[in-house]
Image 1 (tube, rainbow, N blue to C red):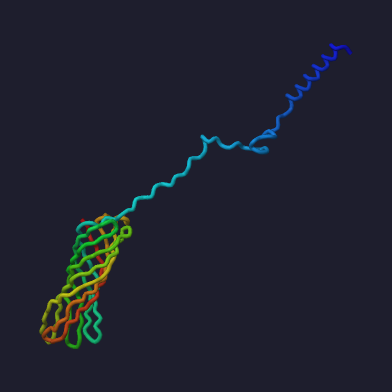
Image 2 (image 1 turned 180 degrees about the horizontal axis):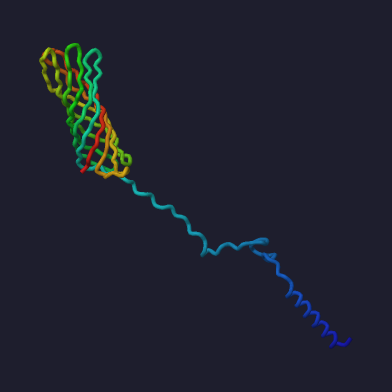
Length: 234
């Protein structure tokens, strides 16, 4: 074989090998020495497409329900006494109240006055005791939780008490003190106007005692009052 024939054979063999390599299928996956590990692999996301960092929303501002200003309202409830061995007048009561609130953040304080009619009465032997009306002038102070105002109250109390005996009757004024507690709720969260509120309240009336004619019997009207009310705030 001469040199020309040998060169021709080598060229043909190289061409055949190249054609076979072109027809061979390319395996799926990473090259053997891929920096991302063995196939199959997924390259890490480009930093430009990384999900944004999560930032929590700022806290909602503290909501303080408004209580500042004047108000008027009505109340109804029950008055009773517990005098062992003596008259214990009890009955229903109802009246009106008005007041003014000041507010500093969640703290509320103010003054309130009320005037109430009462059906409290009791008969002891042949003596009729009754308490036609009473009133108070009090301070209030407490703390608000959302739309609820929880408070204590204390101040002056007065009443007119009547004793009837043998067809005669006599009335006398009593002056004393009162202390109690209550809770008032603003009605705006329940779909009403923010001007309206409801309340529940307990009062103890420590009224002075005295001898009342014609029976010459000490009139003891140390009474309890549990009542509910509605206020309108201006």
